[in-house]
Structures are given as structure tokens and as C-alpha cells.
Image (cartoon, rainbow, N blue to C red):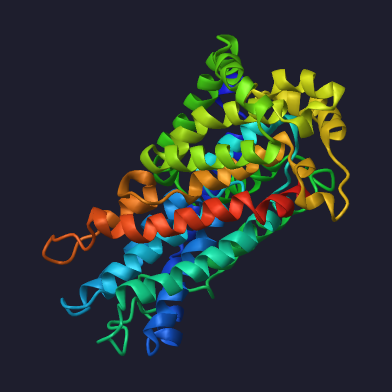
Amino acid sequence: MLSHVFDHVQILVLGGLTIAKALSKVRLEDVAASWLHHHTAHRPSLYLLGVMVLSCLLCSFVSNVAAPLLVLGVIQKTLWEFPSDTNAPKAILLGLAIACNLGGMLSPIASPQNAVALQVLTFHNVSFSSWVAISLPLVAVALLGAWWLLLWWFNPFEHVSYIPLQVTSTHNANIRTPRSVETIFVVTVSLITVVLWCLPASLLFGDTGIIALIPIVLFFGVGVLKKEDFNTLSWHLMFLLAGGNMLGVCARDSHMVDLVASLMEAFVASQSAYVTVAVVICSVGLVTTFVSHTVAAMILLPIVAKIGFMLPAAGHSGAAAVAVASATKIGHHVATTTFAPAVAATVQHHFSWHSLFTASAISPATLVFLSVLMCSGAMAFPISSFPNVNSLLAEDEFGKPYLAARDFLGIGTVITLFLVVSLATWMLPLTALFI
């Protein structure tokens, strides 16, 4: 039972949280913000793009739970210095939320829902590098589109020719610079960990969870992080994932997932595989607009995996029927180390370039992967995700919030619809190339 509560995916997430804590300890986000301000302050539109890009990249390493807090803490004073009659703070905060939502797609540790997806995908191994290769094109296109949309929608810098107030000063004695030994150590260990995550699992250390122990052991072992830092890690997130594991065990043992999937069996049988994929993606996008991304992923992804094995593209394999049972064993290590390679070898399709654009490219793993990307892509409401809530709660120096719910509704809906269309069209063959 303990293996269900705390498994290798939780260790992977804990490694990401440890890296985030270490980077925050040496104030690298302040240095990055200072560099960004120095190079883009005279071109406010590029400053907005820079905040979005840095936030997105930060999410891929420290998760989109920690990244929005770090970035908002750095840019808060800059927002206070803008004139009251400009939409610049509104655009920057929305850009931060959108970038962190998109950044939650970038890597397996970029968001809690990605960790849930790894637990569901015990029947198919998705490497760290494959995850990044699939999600990066979508994130890049969506990020640039969101940046242009913010500039067009709000015209935030119409009366702003310069970003006021340098965000931070690296000459401040209280801020450690990248030249310090401690900072170099933190950056080096973090980069080595990320590189090892991207390498094939069989090359050196094996599972990404084992690699995640490197920053945990080194940062706490040499004293970069203290007992107080350990106590302030996002343990609520770890227990949330543990609860998701137990929810999966209960769903499996009670046959709830089987029941829900059986109710959809007639629909899946009567429709083409592509129509089923489109309906699943739209349904996931709709649910995760109103429900927390992580909670929705815990509930929906096991059901999506079941539906995936009902698709005609997956059903022709004799081993696929056996693999259905393992699809709902969330966090089960045996499935990863013994049964999963055999199933993956059986259900993996060999595509020609022509077949990449047909329904034969659809596999259960592809459907789960597209669905978890859609979980992060739903951002129409302030309550849709933590990055949205984080930006909504930002206030000026007088305690007045910058954003209202209607600010998210318009631009968030447009971006969500773009992601739905993208995942149901050109992202399908791209995902099939790597999964």
C-alpha cells in the first residue's frame, strides 16, 4: 500500500521542488529579472514576451505551482510603478498566467497533472526528452500567439515607452550573484539533473525518479538547503498526488473506471477513432475549465486510458486487451518494470508518413498524452488553474486587484479553443512520431 502512496513519480516531483527551492535560495530569479529589465526595458512589448518566456521555461524545471509565485514576487514592484490609466500590469499578469499554464505542458515535472499522467501511463514508457520534443512546438506557437493577442487585445503599452523601476539590483549585498560558489554549485547540479532526465533511462541511472534523488541528496547534504527549507517544500502537493494514487487504486478495485468506460463503449464502437479523440479532447478541455487541472487529471486520465484501449487502432492487438487492466494501476511499479515493456512493444505502431495523418496513428498512450496537455491548456476562468489564481490575487500598493474574472474569460477562451483545435489536428501526428 505504501508504494501507491509514495512512488517514483512523487520522488520525481520532489526533485523538481528541491531544485526550485535551491534556485530561489540563491535568488537566481532576481538576477534573471534584472537581466531582462536591462535588455528590454526600452521596448515594453519585448519585456512582456521576456516575462512570458522566462516564466514558461521556469515552469518546466520547477513546476507551474512554484514558478508563478517566484516570478510574481520579482515583478510585483514593477507593476506598482505603472501609471494607473494603463493596461500594462493587466497584460503582464495575464501573460504570466498564460505562460505558466503553457509551461505546465513542457516536461513531466512541469505540473502535477503531468505527474498524474506518468502514473496512468504505466503501460507505455514516455521519456523526458520525448515529452519535451512533443510539447515544445505547441507551447512555442501558443506562447507567441498569446503574446500577440495580449498586445492586440489590451494595447497595454500605448502610453508606456519604458518599463519603470529596475526589478532588482545584483549589487545588493543581500542578493547572491551567479559568481558565488554556492550559486555555481546549484546551477551545475540542476543542469546535470535536467540533462540526465533527458538521456535514455537505460544509459546511466535508470528511472527519472532515481535521478531526482541527486539534487535532493546534494542540496540538503552539503547545506545549501536547511531543515526549514525541507519543512516548507510543497508537501500539500505531494499529499495531493498521493491522494490521486489512492483514488486510482479505489477506482480500480471498485471497477468504477470499467463501469464508466463500458457506458462509453457503444459510442466508441459507433464512431471513428478520430471522432472519439476529438470528443475526448473537447470533454477534457470543458471539464478542466471548471475544475482544478490536477483534480480533473486524477479523475479523467484513467478513464481516457480505458477509452484508448477501446479504439479500433488499439483493439487489433491481442495483448491490448490484457493491457487494459494495467492502464488503471496508477503508481504500480511492477507494471513499469516488467509488463509495460511487453505491452509497449505490442501496441506500438510502425507508421509510414502517410499513416501519421490517419486514425491508425491513434494509440492509448497518444490519447492520454493529448488529454494531459489539454488539462494544462484550459485557462478560460480564474479558477481553472493555480497560475490563474496567482495572477488574480495580485494587488496594487493600495490593495486593489489588477484583474477581474472577465479579463481571463475573453483571452483565455481564445487560447483554450486554439489548443483544442491544435491537439485534435496537427499535434496528433506529431505525438504519434514520439509515442
